[in-house]
Length: 322
Ligand SMILES: NC(=O)C1=CN([C@@H]2O[C@H](COP(=O)(O)OP(=O)(O)OC[C@H]3O[C@@H](n4cnc5c(N)ncnc54)[C@H](O)[C@@H]3O)[C@@H](O)[C@H]2O)C=CC1
Ligand SMILES: O=C(CO)COP(=O)(O)O
Image 1 (cartoon, rainbow, N blue to C red):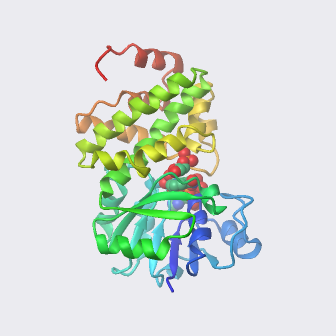
Image 2 (image 1 turned 45 degrees about the vertical axis):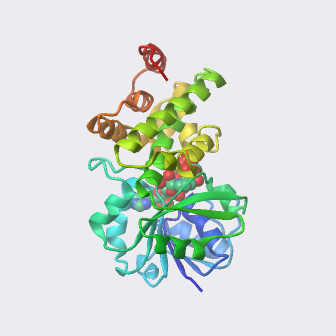
């Protein structure tokens, strides 16, 4: 039987714990003492995944040392905290690590695999795709990409983690899986702005299609494969998060589109990764000489640019071939 360690007791780490507990014992590390206590006593994570009953096979802990004996470790802290958290975890060098955050590190412009590679020699895979935590935790069907450069590792992880309603598709394009997940968060903010500003469904569809073109240009420039970006971890997740207020990134955009203050929208413990990714993505796109006007508009809005003028500037770009 496989034992799982999960580092990060937010919505996604908790949902993954609930799912994987069907395959083997799960130890779930959370930073917040009250989250640890609530999971162990009330079998619920009221702060990050309220209303979802958690199975008995999950043991929560506040001590990272309790994770080190696990056969497989999933790291599910937000992207900007991966480096510090993984450094503290001190995992054995042979333990397979699955990176689950969707973002790009500020400053370094590094994707999650690149950050992890700075720190540890472990076998590494990336999990990315359309997967709202509350649906996965409720056992609703979900298909998601497990990407690893090592084919045998990918096969082993998929065999250990797949569930009847949790379908893992294997890929060797780690960059593609990571870039799709990171960029879709920024585009979900853009779609939320369209919703909040009342610009209509035609505009949203245009943003999804033109945003996907930006994602593909950037991904290919960074060495990803276009077909990966057209799969679950790119287009699949883009469609999910651009079409539902269940997405925190989409909701952030709705608030921005309504003219609400950014500080209010970012208050609270839940993370909208696109807010941290947008400015980094714009810098990385400039470095790669890739044009990403929608993502640049999102970064400008997050930096305080007015909504109406930012949208007008986007629409006033020269007309060109699709
Ligand atoms: N919620 C979802 O449906 C999905 C989320 N993800 C990704 O998973 C990652 C984690 O997101 P969620 O679990 O949703 O988080 P969340 O928004 O539910 O909770 C925030 C998390 O950040 C942690 N945190 C805050 N400050 C920290 C610090 N200084 N060091 C380490 N951790 C810190 C909190 O302890 C908590 O676990 C993100 O990259 C997100 O994009 C991926 C797929 C689905
Ligand atoms: O990544 C997600 C679903 O695949 C969750 O999206 P949000 O972070 O926007 O809520």
